[in-house]
Image: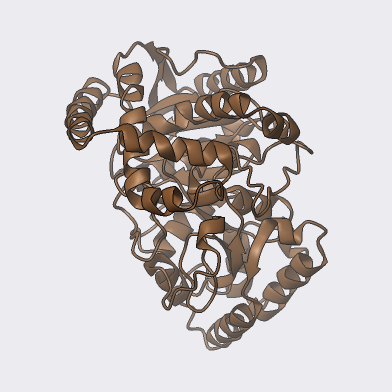
Length: 442
């Protein structure tokens, strides 16, 4: 049995049926990480001693018929901003080198109680403040489908750990698209949970008003089970909706602008598949999309600068240049402007969801473009900035709207279909995802 070929849920079922042992599974992934030529470019630090101990306990529970959950005994990789007791957690930042927490993040604690096996910490963009996945100070994980291209960020190593067979499931974070962009560009499922659904305690912050925990996975089922394991509520995937009973909206305003031909072709193909299956898809206009984007240069930089501005300002030139400059925008934002922007955003959220209340979800290409070359962006900081802004545009709608959002792989590599759901309707969104993921992928 090749464990890396299976989804996390399938591994859990193999363990439950007694056909696979957590120790055997964990050792297979440890061996793969140690032997892989890009292992150290994907994992910042490994936790093999911990993983072996957790696998042994999971094995004992399985043999006793006392499994802690459907993912009990399944290995997981964790982004480098989830505190891990006694193991460096540096958020990909040179300025946090040597930071060793004394307790696990709450979501990691809950996952461990549910039987998940912690393989280690994956590389990421510094402080999680870029959607491209480039990090010259630590590592830029490889994109398997697009060699030489960016993996997407900031959860870059999370995506690579799955596609390179070094983890069956990965935990990233999403502040403006940092789960969904790497999931899209690596043809994976990525779930941005509603802000507040999962604990952010002992998670290195970026923008506390927007930070969310989210999994990158092979299937929507895996995402639902992992969110349950982290404390997000029962992953009830029964009573799935039929595609013919679903009604979606495509918002033409801004979300479809500047999309390249590959992304638009994949999006159109996915929409056609949904329509053929009986789903109703309407095209609508909404000024709320461009209006919300106007608030981004106020809200995100301000919160990021409040979190890390003093450290960055006292240590100039240490953080990768384009990321450092992005932080510095925050020092130009006044408290009054920030508070007014939040007040405007609160009104916009109410207006938008009232206007689309008849729809099950909003559809758009997850990312407007395919992944660009790493070398080109390293050589041209202006291009880095412009591509980063464009890459984050469509995913950021979900963060600004304060809701859940899911990206599904399409029939085209590196192209995803994003579904924006309603706030705290995460389980409903994942049920829809399970119902349509095979349709979308063709």
